[in-house]
Image 1 (cartoon, one colour):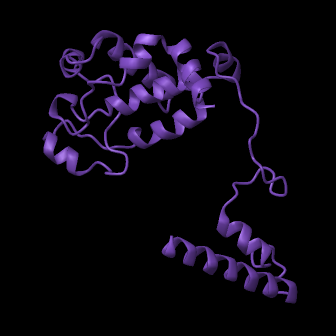
Image 2 (image 1 turned 45 degrees about the vertical axis):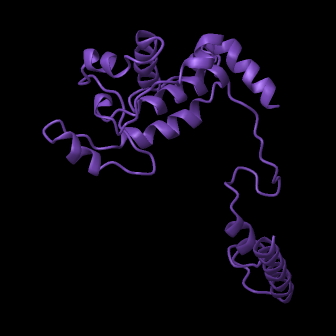
Length: 200
């Protein structure tokens, strides 16, 4: 499966970009990047172009789009306010394009990287509302649902949700003898699994 995914990415991104596109990209933590999550944005561009992962990419772009970057503050002050879990900010029109080109000077194709950063920003920014038709023209068709839990259609399945529902807590039915017995069995399985991880 991994080979097929890589072959698809190589075909859609081009061999050279596939091999070099994410190399020699400055980190958000490096001053020349001016706080921009360059690598993250180029990776999202790859996800879109290679696999059409629009919703996935849009959700991740929200994280860097919510980063607060104040031009009246120093670089150091701004960096302190960025989430360490998803560091960096998004590209915006206030970005100095000459400085961005300078930040990408070690990239094999700074102009191409810069154009992809601008393109992915235009596709994913809050104000962007691509219709399903527009996404399909770009090759980003809605995939089929890979949910394996048919008994929870349309819901986000979480372990706690499953366990609490199975025990009658979320279903509104309250505890029953069956739910109490099932809870004992589940606790036993969790304990055995935990012991095996500690021993192994």
